[in-house]
Amino acid sequence: MATSSAIRLATQRQEYFDQLASSWDREITVEVVECLSNIVEQLNIKPGDWVLDIGSGTGILLPLLIEAVGDKGKIIALDFSTKMLHQAKAKNFSSIVDYIQANVTAIPLSNNFADLAICNGVFPHFSDKTKALREIARVLKGGGRLVICHTASREAINQLHQSIGGVVATDLLPHEFQLIKLIKQAGLVITHIEDNPKRYLIIAERQTKVSHTLSRKL
Image (tube, rainbow, N blue to C red; front, side, top):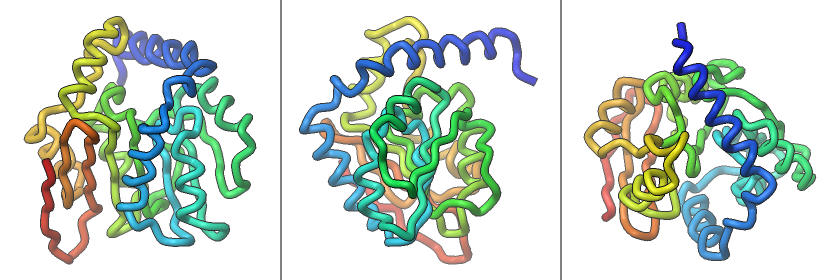
C-alpha cells in the first residue's frame, strides 16, 4: 500500500506537469523532433503494430508513431497528467489513437497487449521504477519491445532535473548497471544501449526462447 508521502509526491508531480501543459510545446525544437524521428525510424515499427506511448505528454511522438503503424495499427497515449492529454487531444490526431489518463504502475490494459512500449523523456519521473517496468512487461506481447529514450545524455538529463529542483530534483535516470538489473528483474532483456550527448536510447525485449545480442553505442 502506498505511503502518504508517496501519494503526496505523486500528486505534486502530477500538478507540476499539469501546470506545464499549456507551454510544453514551446520547448520542442527542430533538433528534438529530428532526433526523435531518427529514433522511431531505427525501431523499424511495422504497419499494424500496437504501440503504447507512455508519458505521451502533448503528443510529440504521435505523428511519428501514426505514420509508422499506419491505418491498421493502434496507439495508446498514456499519461498521468490530464492537462497534457487534453493538449494532445486538441490536436485531433488520427482515430487510431486512444488516450488514457493513468499511472504507469497501474496500466489499465490487458496482458500481451502491445508490440512496443515507448517511454520518451519520462522514465526518470516514474516514482516506482521496479513496479513500472513490471507493468510494462505485463502488457507487452512475447517478443515485444520496451524503448526508453531521451534527446540528450543520461548525465545531461540528470543535471537538468537537479537544476530545476523541487518535485523533479530526484527524478533521475539510473546508472547503467542499476537499469540493467531492474529491466532483467521485470523479465526483459536489453538488446541495445546508447548514451551520448545527442541521445539516450535503451531497447529491451520481453523474453522469448530466442537469445539476443546486446548492442552498444556510446
